[in-house]
Length: 245
Image 1 (cartoon, rainbow, N blue to C red):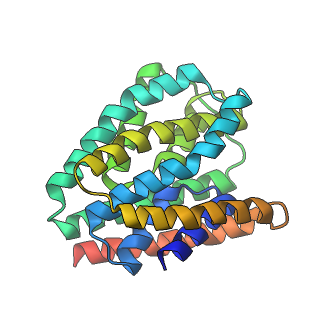
Image 2: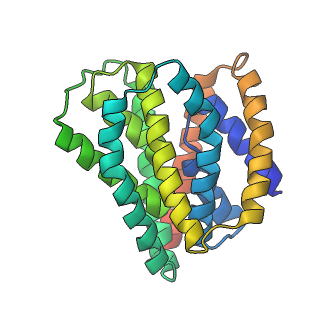
């Protein structure tokens, strides 16, 4: 079951571009009933390893803005550590954590829908301080919920810088790698990662990434992406409802 989940999540990532943490944690929580802190920690490391190949490709092609990435990591890395520690402290408050994770998934799905349908972006170059603060918010909620670096990081870069679309993606992937390494590593140090589950997800994810890369050449990605985002809205709403009961 876990191998199949990793496989289908990786295929979905390849076809939609939606981040691994946004997809993985809700699935682990709702379908495998994994403890919230283990679901988040395992999702962070799964997403980290899944992004490495793409990150290396973008770096080799010169599609990573190092100055912007430095600003993002300056705000995001310490905040991701804080979010991870906060989840460790609040893990007994399952309903509260489910509420926060569900709200984060909803926010990420809505941000992705905005990016999908809004084509007339007129970015306003933000002062570096605002980039650092925006990255800190993303890091905090990613460390707590495993979601956000992909959708919210892309939105921050598209609306707050004049980087080209491909450079936005490359820079955001490395931002997510940095947050995933710190947040996932801290969760692992706290014993909030299931190594066996991570291995099975990774095996399925490797096979799924190859399948997704092949399908992406023949499948219309936009309808699939929109459908997946509406599914995430449903899943996020379900988690919110479980949290408020």
